[in-house]
Every structure is written in structure tokens, then in C-alpha cells.
Image 1 (cartoon, rainbow, N blue to C red):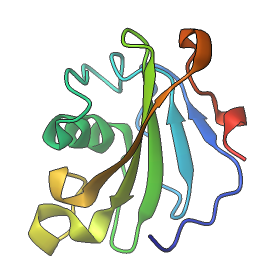
Image 2 (image 1 turned 120 degrees about the vertical axis):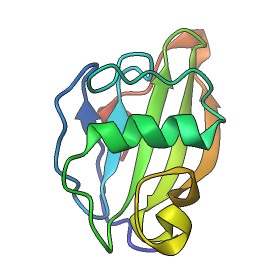
Image 3 (image 1 turned 90 degrees about the horizontal axis):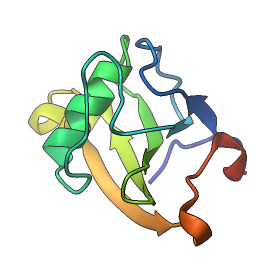
Image 4 (image 1 turned 60 degrees about the vertical axis):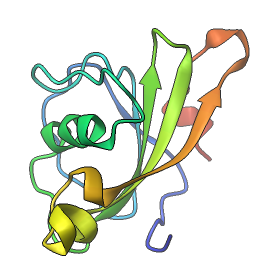
Length: 121
């Protein structure tokens, strides 16, 4: 994994409007069950489901964009970390879809807490 340069996380609120991608960033989504528009993640290990959630969250993704997405499952009490490489999406043609996403980790916080942007440092 190359190209990730962020040293702090960027918070993305539940039901946030589509944002612009910052290449190399780390995004922390407050709630995978309340994404941009009507997007909801039902299965955090289904990369097609996660791809739809992330594609809705960003409005300007383009060639060369790579980022980390940490998405909180507030119902399940876990957080999921994904590496996203736009160039790998759509079979290498470029997109945010299941081809662009790699599940890196499933994190269970003590006490069922969720991760916040301040936890990324």
C-alpha cells in the first residue's frame, strides 16, 4: 500500500453530503448504516456493498486517488478499515467499486465504542 500520506483522520458525519476525495487521506465514517443519500452498508465484508457506500460519499474521485476508509458499524460495535485504490476499480478501468477495495482490518473497541477521526494518528 503506497500513497497514503495522512497523519490524522478526516471525520465524515452520518448522512454527509458527497465530498471531494483528498488523495492519500484517511476518512473515518461515523455510521455505515447512514451514508450519503440512502446508502447503507448491510454487510461490511461485501465489498460491492461497501463500494456503493463509498462511491456515494465522494463526488470527484479520479485516476491516482488512493485513501483509507474506516467505517463504523454502530449496531455491531465494530469498525472496518479499507484501502481504496481508484485505479483498480472496474477491473482496472477506474472506479470506486469492489475491485478497488481491500478490507484491511476489523476493529472491536473496548466497551463497544466506535472509532473517531482523533483515533487516527
